[in-house]
Length: 73
Image (cartoon, rainbow, N blue to C red; front, top):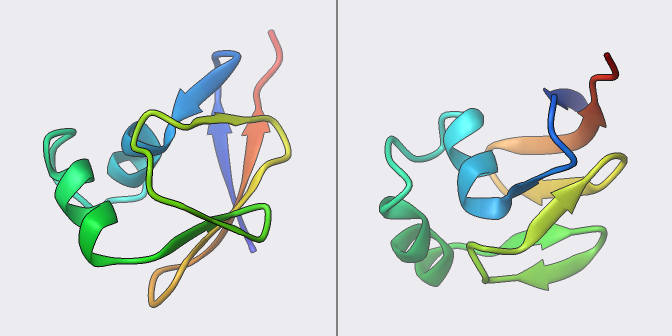
């Protein structure tokens, strides 16, 4: 599982997909989520605005499994 560090309280699913280079722009998030299944903490999620917090686990099939890690300080 790969850790993805954030320095804010949360990131949206759309921002996350861009951070891990699955999409090249935020505008592609809606399309990507309509074509592919993404799981957050074991549940299917299709909302690009879904907030991801510290310790959330995201499974992006064919891309990997990731955990959000909030950088303190």
